[in-house]
Length: 377
Image 1 (cartoon, one colour):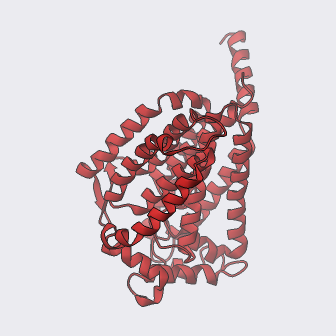
Image 2 (cartoon, rainbow, N blue to C red):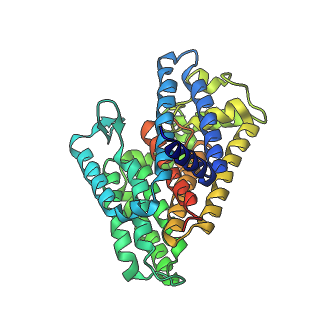
Image 3 (cartoon, rainbow, N blue to C red):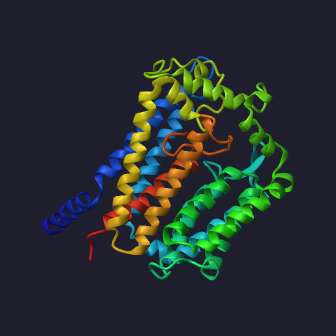
């Protein structure tokens, strides 16, 4: 290797490290470690050693996830936004394909079996919607609220994948699509009359959605949320066991791998949707507070990156990813402590799952890409 080439590589390496937001990366990595600690406990109990391989699979997904994070950091986010419609279209093809050749699990058809990996198109669609919405909303006039005409196109872009996801059925993921996209729209601004009209339509449509839009098991989830004791051994079982686990942790928790609800298999889906229950039972209020604090740090850093982004598109991407993380955390923790109905919503960076982890690292890579270029001209 020539001295000039070696010198150029060293300069590029120094530039990369100086531009990379290491504090943001460290906060994400800390949440990864918390997730691995709790996943190990959730999959290495007395009665569920058959799930111990999930821990090592998660480590493998984590390695791939960080490669994606660093790779997306090096890619200019503006080039991705330029190709946003193509990316969205390819994901739409995958989402449609799920309805024909998707893998069925727990009564829902949500995954494409790729042999080495079960891909969930609705997960990646949540991130790709952020790119498309950023492309659309960045063209809106600054400091001007959006009217019906301006809302028509972004609403159509969101509602098509939303409808396909509801059909799977996966109401939780579909709701998070709306929440993430809605956060970006609210950031740009909507005319007050449209918000009032939407609220009235929602109130009027609620009885129709309840009677004709929801399936029987979905209605049962809502009724169980309102009164878990109505079916403690059936639809209310998950909620009751989760609240017992969270409450029994108290201040310092029962200790690593000493949670009775998780180790004795009273707690369902402890490695995915109810991983926060495992954390609360074994590490108590202190462990829960530290975890929420790290999420809060990630949100604060994201806001700072959005403020210092070099263009409106970058700010919108960061707001979208921040909304994606917040609503996932809000829904997951809300359901495990009994404040929200139970839906299939993993806790980002903590729950087990290849699609969820890779999608989240991809989304965070977009924030890193915006931060990486904030001072480049």
